[in-house]
Every structure is written in C-alpha cells, then in structure tokens.
Amino acid sequence: MTRWRIFTLSVVAIVLMAFSPAPPSYKVAVLKYKGGGDYYSNPTSVPNLVDFANRNLSTNIDKDVPFIEVGSPEIINFPFVHMTGHGNVVFSATDASNLRNYLLGGGFLHISDNFGMDKFVRKEMKKVFPELDFIELPFSHPIYHQTYDFPNGLPKIHEHEKKAPQGFGLMWEGRLVCFYDFECDLGDGWEDFEVHKDSDEARTKALKMGANILQYVLMGGEE
Image 1 (cartoon, rainbow, N blue to C red):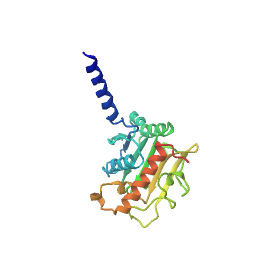
Image 2: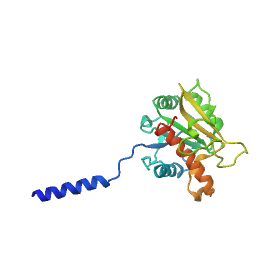
Image 3: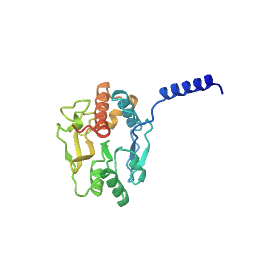
Image 4: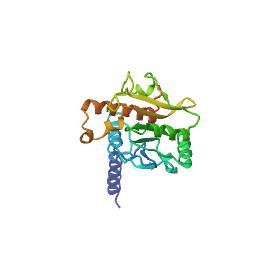
C-alpha cells in the first residue's frame, strides 16, 4: 500500500469520525408495573420529550425509550424513569425493594397521574419508602426554574376535577428522588398533537416543564 493511499484512508477515517453522531449520553425509560393499570398509555409522550430536550437543551438522550419492569435489575441503566397510567398499581416486595435501591443509588422516578392512579400510587410508594411522605414542593423549588421558568409551579394541561395542579416530591436526605405531577397531566401534553389535540401553547408548556425535570435530574440543576 502506497503512502498516498494510506494518507487518503486516514483522512477519510478522520472525516467519518468527525461527522459520526456521538453515542447517547443518557438513556431514559418508562416503568412497567403490575396491577392492571395502563403503564403503556401515552406511547409518544416520552420520545417527544426526549426530542424536545435534545433540540432545545443540547442534551444527547437516546431516542429509543424502552419499558423497564419495576423489579428488573436493568433499571440502574436509566437515570430517569417515567411512570404513568390511569388505574391500579401493584408493587411486590421485590419490586419495592428494587425500586428503593434504584432511587437510593441515584436514580429518579417521575410519576405523571394520567387520572385515576393517585390512591394506588401513593399506597405502593409507601412500600418503597415507608418512612417518607409526599410533600408538595414550593414554587421556589429549582425544578420549576431551570432553562424554563415556571413561577407558579406546574402548568395545567388537562382538566379533570377542576383542581389546581400540584407537584409532590419524595425527599431522601435532602435529595429529590421522585417527582409526582398531580392534576396536571404533563405526559398527555407531551403526546403527538393528533392524540389529544391540545393547543400549541399547552403542549409547549408541558414540554418545557418536562425539559426542566430532565435538566434537573440529568444535568445537575439543583441551583
């Protein structure tokens, strides 16, 4: 092989490397749980949120968003896990232990009540953290003030019972390990327009708040 040919191949290799997309920095997932609740609802929501964050926050999150079983040891591969649904939720003792270890080890759970899961998810999260209670986060909490500012807390995306949206958290040794949006329905707001036909304004607010959550979790946005 001539020197010129070696040089040419080297240049081509460098160019290909320069223009090859970097591997994803983060992977996120949707929680699969037992009990009959539709954990699989809102199939387009998290992929749309990932796309929004990658375009607007310069994140590099994997566009492939798998389901992860709550009792799976593979959950540790996902620093952010989203949970949603309309109905019953059941965690076995093994599930609860695995989820607890995941959250104590640095993982984060975002729960978005799609309507009807509140009484179930609160009971099951007590299995995970019997010593903790959900507390309503003040509007001054950093999760509302990342790239996008929400001075009045969560935006109202869908109307269910004419109640104000609330953001609850589970705090472990000063760290927010779980954020729960209630009477808000962020996940619905992330869906494709054709699903709920939400206004552009509502969908943008939902995506911006979701991006704040991702930024807070993945990019160390505590301040």
